Image (cartoon, rainbow, N blue to C red; front, top):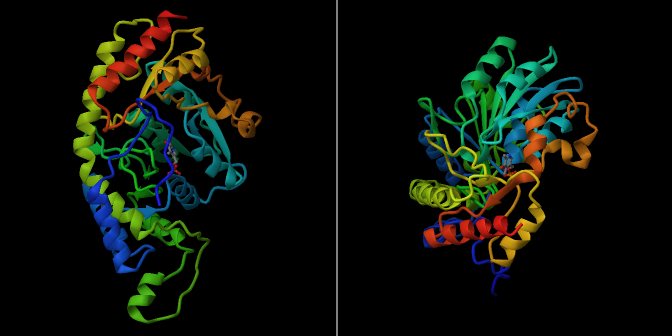
Amino acid sequence: MSAPTAPRWRVTLADNTVDEQEIAAVTDVLRSRWLSAGTQTAAFEREFADRLGADDAVAVSSGTAALHLAMMALDLGPGDEVIMPALTFVASAAVVALAGATPVLADVCAPDDLTVDPADVTRLVTPRTRAVVAMHYAGYPADLAALRMVCDRHGVVLVEDAAHAPVVEHEGRMLGTHGDIGCFSFFATKNVTSGEGGMVLAGDPAVRERIRLARSHHLTTSTWDRRSSGDASYDVAGIGLNYRPTEVSAALGRVQLGRLGRDRQRRRELVATYREVLAAAPELVLPFAGRTGDSALHLMPVVLPEGTDRGGVREGLAAAGVQTSVHYPPVHHLSAYRDSAGAGRSALTVTDAVAPRLLSLPLHSRMSDDDAVLAGRALLSCLRGR
Ligand SMILES: *Cc1c(COP(=O)(O)O)cnc(C)c1O
């Protein structure tokens, strides 16, 4: 049986580095015949926590599950507010809205810094604010020192949406360990992928234990434990869901985590190549080009010149075989959130100005330098032709 083939782009937006090592790891799991969370999952948690300098980690079934468990640990309810960037993936807004609470959208810093603006966050804090979500856009750290200060001053929780940023050092510690809770995604297009998957970190062992319990129906013993011990009894002392990963995804994640260093180096070279080629168009903004610190280099975003027909540029690039995307349509531009109470609290000036100009170019560690040159030059010729 052959797998269906993806459209034949010359340069795809994202790809993974899955090869024989992952195939062998998954085959071993299948031969073990235990497929839900078990020893592979425990080992993945241990290795991920060690890599990030955290005490422990909880593996889950997706990044969205990670964010949902983070919000469940806060006992959010109607009237509560959670501040997050308007320019983010919708998942963090959804898990807040699901609790009956209000996602309050904050502006991003500037066209060349697409992380949440701590000054706007400060303006948006009210007595109802329960948490602030920092998203490390494209793998570049948000201003955690400033956000930490705002959160501490008002006694609110700092959650990191580190879906773009696995294993990134920032001011002496890893992203995901600066906040009270850190959430990661291992979705198919992320830097570390297990197909679907995620991880939650929490500095407070009590919060971590709550998250671990809620991941699996809040059962006091897991199926794996009961299988090992033969004891059939359990209690449920809180509300929980099933957000367990599978052993297959954990085994994949473990191999992928081992590849991350090499993959990162390739991404670094590709981003350098892009910046060299795109320097020929000084009217383009290359976000984060001035950053010198560590980054996961998850995306290669550009901000097109004002007034550019982005649809036309994307069609031109597609005609050249270059797949592009937009990260992201801002949350308040999505119909479910347009009229939500938290959408109109900030003017969102920068977000609204950059939203129609954002474009993500292909970036993944299977790309060659020639691929980046091809994609970069294709963008230059689209801009000249406008
Ligand atoms: C991918 C992503 C998520 C959601 O993760 P899933 O694993 O797809 O559920 C959340 N936030 C951001 C910023 C993401 O990029």
